[in-house]
Amino acid sequence: YFSWFHLQTTAAAQLAAGSDSFVFSAQAWAPVAGTNALSIRAAAIDLADAITLSGVRSVTFSADGDLRLSGGNIVGVTGQYRLGGALLSKGDIVLRAAQIYPTTMSTFSLVSDTKVRFEGNGAAASAPLSAGGELNVYAPVIEQTGVVRAPGGQIGLGCKSGGCPASAPYVKLIGGGNVAIAPTTSVTLADGSITSVSLNGKLVPLGALENGEGWYYPF
Image (tube, rainbow, N blue to C red; front, side, top):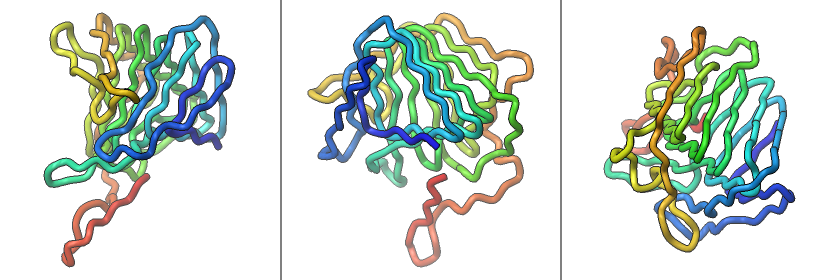
């Protein structure tokens, strides 16, 4: 099991803790380009909050089971709560797992200056007990060959020139500024891949109770 959150990493494996003093958005370091490759494998992988990869030309996260994307720092949005998070890199991002999905009420962005690729690992996986998550993918090239889900939520693949957001949703750079978004030139949905926002008939405990309390199920 591998869990990584709110950190910056470089090819030299140096880790620096981010700031926890911000309330309204996750805080990320600006990524720096490099020529090294980083590969991480575990039975299950959680990527949480704002993560910056610097000094790498490519990173591969490979899970034997699921790979989950979770926001950190509760973000106040009118009428609801969101959790903001992102994985930022100047190089390629490859995510390989039985299935890849944002956790409940998380808005998670994958941001690359080159390519984001999703791959399956051959393992079977049913729709997770997650709801209302949002996954945004920003890169010039996006390749979806695996299983990507956001049950009861949203999946956004790329943006066109002139229509890209000013920054990744709910994520700001430490020291100020926005996360730069490159327009997308190519999106590939491979034969046999699954890109789904269906709950597949599952009941997920999420919402408000009669006493006014919220029921939040962060998986």
